[in-house]
Length: 399
Image (cartoon, rainbow, N blue to C red; front, side, top):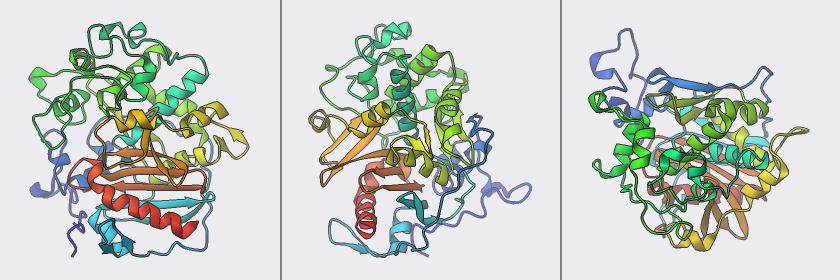
């Protein structure tokens, strides 16, 4: 058995499960490895969720291409060659699917994953929220150039006191926050406890609304790309405040009901009901990506206005991105809670999430790649040496 091939079928089986096979949120076992290979595929069993409803209609089938993608070897930047199966195991892939010219050319599930099983998206959810923000800007419900504090007075005196909503969306807010995921004492883990995404001390429970105002400004806004988790929660708070609605209802009404989804989009919630990350099935994740290769259309219906699609597909400021400490991502940019890979003259939006969640969109090649993972360590950058050679191998095959 290869290192990545940890069997998960004995977790939480039987009634009751064997004591050493029980996974709980409250004791943190859900986020231990290899248990998280089970929990990422069953999060709705562990924590409260809010559904973004898929709508009353039938799902929109994904047409399959009879010519199956060849599971070829992957050559890494250092010259290492991995077989396709070694790539899946080494990167702890739970599921992988590929659309080319709108047709499903590859789909595979491993371990606990399956076509009707929602998988935790981690920070890939940011890109859906960023798309909602772009929609509300187009509808003139939201002013991207307004100060954050014109909507959220609670953030006076914080890092966002003189930041604009656009700066939040593009992650160019200067703040003092230690976001080292490999250090359990870093600020980011205190922050994540306030989101309800990991267990918190119930005797000293703080919410996002308590924690965000305590984050101080550091440096100048708008000059350096700095990927900081609190920005997405500030943006979510803004969207709730300006609309008077939850993110789950906004996601349902503006996007999820219109893409032909098979299943609801499930948001985790904090201790007071605020939406945090989410789970979705792989096929529905593909359908979201398909919006951008189809210029915002689903069939004959224009789901995303043309200006929203153009704004997102344009990519971000590469010079500002280069000022940040992301040297392993050469020629990338960031905008509206989307990452962008600039490759061979093409601008490819990417949703990235911890432990290997990825949605890669190449509009020019009419290509969408969706990947779920459960790698032992959180940073997505640790998988970059495998993910991008994989993407390039797929792109070359289907060119």
